[in-house]
Figure 1 (cartoon, rainbow, N blue to C red):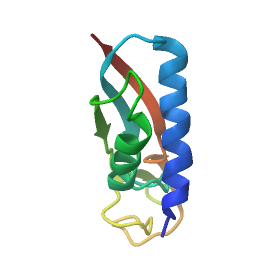
Figure 2: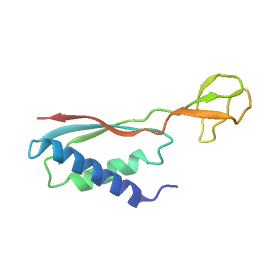
Figure 3: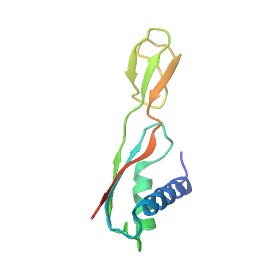
Length: 113
């Protein structure tokens, strides 16, 4: 399980990156993509965002998190599958899979006032 400090430092970096681009302009929303396999807990990130953004131009901004599921491609049968849990197995039973998506951790857009 990820430790809260992990999300704290990631969220601090996110806030710093937004402030570097927006300066003193008021920010209404921050959109990020946090894949299921990224190792980051979205709820912990939301909590940290509220704490870190307090007293900055991001105070009161919404942190909107897109949480894509992981997608794998089986090297045995070629089938793409959405990961139902954190153990990457193909419906055909093979564990020889390539992870196509789900590791994302990116800032996608910022809404300014």
